Length: 495
Ligand code: DQQ
Image (cartoon, rainbow, N blue to C red):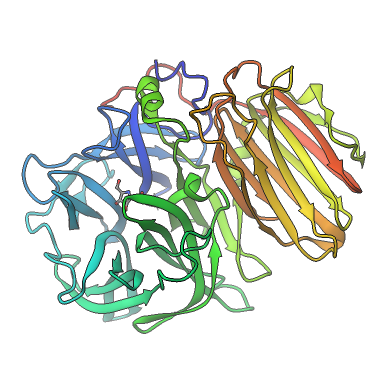
């Protein structure tokens, strides 16, 4: 049933069935990419979360591995094994995750077999028995763990996501020699929840899934530290954000706050790893935009984003792009001749489909808007529109996704999404759009916007078109049908 769902992506990773949320334990270990994820194999609902596990050698095709962590029948993770990471403890793969008991979570540890398939939970769990004393916290979970220092003087450091009540989200810093016994250092950085409440860059009352990494250390221009987190507030997830700045000693000095993905909750709880080629690879969770009942009926829910390479952009933010490996799935290629775009848009009958990869380069005159129409039904009743526009004074750009007519089903989320865009010379925009059934990933000059769409006539909603309002030159347009990356045959619920 789950596989017959026309909204189920075919080249994005989804679980064999049931519920999937955050990416966990991302790593490239002896040439194999490991993707663990928050998983309920028993139902398409968030309940008693396990750790699912999949492996890949090319970041394109994934093989299901046995479930890695199962909540204990008793003990500190009896109500779920929540998000965490994988570290290399002198050759021993080790997971640090949040054990949930009742309404609370505490850090736990598990050691893995050499192939990362079997995991033994530490008898000393939880390895931190209580949140920092004397601090009124909103929550305490999710982990970022790394080894720091050189020679004899190395130490493990860990961030735990949290929030200080009445103040804002925070990441608490800890230190350890053995991953088992931890000393509390202090808050690495704390946000101000009274600022911009409800806005698209509001930092929330708790920071979920904190992820700290350095970019550009091999480059002459110098490096930047990045602190990624997902802003959360009283039971609702909001959006992923990041601070750029400098991590030094026991603090992080921020330079600027940025939105990580303009899709907001559709690219949530991201985690990254540096792979064996030195690339920073990031995955995020694409939540559903349909009702719990629709999820339950589908028998599956939650999509893992395509893996992204994250680098420093020239404007001081992050540049994101799908890993180049994905071009392996490209099949029939269609090109559209360069020229001026017409208002409102011209259908491109040669580029139909619900598994597509589109690359285009546009030049926008001041005040112009270019639009790419996707998943349109022949009668135009349903259509999704990606728009890039340039301000009248020519200086600013905007990326916008219109989902208002993406579905006639009134129960699915069709709110538009948007964010700022830095334009290239002469209003240049490089746009890459990946359509995979209900999953949509858009990259405009390296700025991503991820979302979900659910046309009610999915088989007919395959039309593509391109057009403009104002003066827009189409310099290049190429599109490919994308092959499915799923392995043939049934996928076991318990691999
Ligand atoms: N999901 C996990 C938590 C995390 C949240 C639970 C983020 O560890 O804070 O499934 O989506």
